[in-house]
Length: 156
View 1 (cartoon, rainbow, N blue to C red):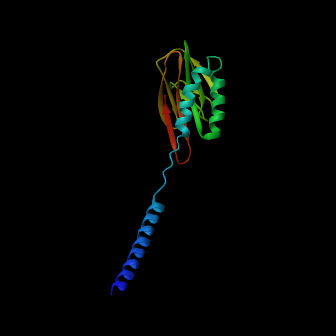
View 2: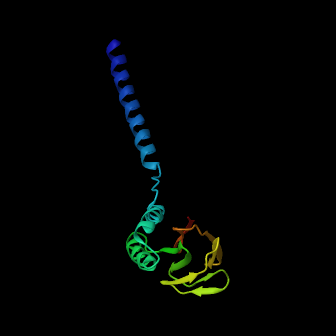
């Protein structure tokens, strides 16, 4: 009688191990993998870090244009409206379409505009309005990435 009990007990443990493995494998396979794409925020942070160092009033548009060419290798929809202030305000448009500034100026893509010193710049595009702060002797920016399924904006 003992041998039958031990034989059945071994089968029971084997069956329980198979069931537990199936449950464990099923729960691992059913978990969704969350992929966080930090490319957009990394590019924005990189621009804010490099632009004050690399761009002065005369080369701000050139730096911004070159940065956008680099950034679009990582995020093809990446764009910048950059504001450089050093006595006067230079606004660079690199969002891929015309923008309206302070309800007074239309600025085409890949162009810059010089304005008198002010506290902020109002930018209108994509049926949205953004206020970019103007800080003396530094760079502020609006970052945009617009695709069919995702729209992202950051103002810094």
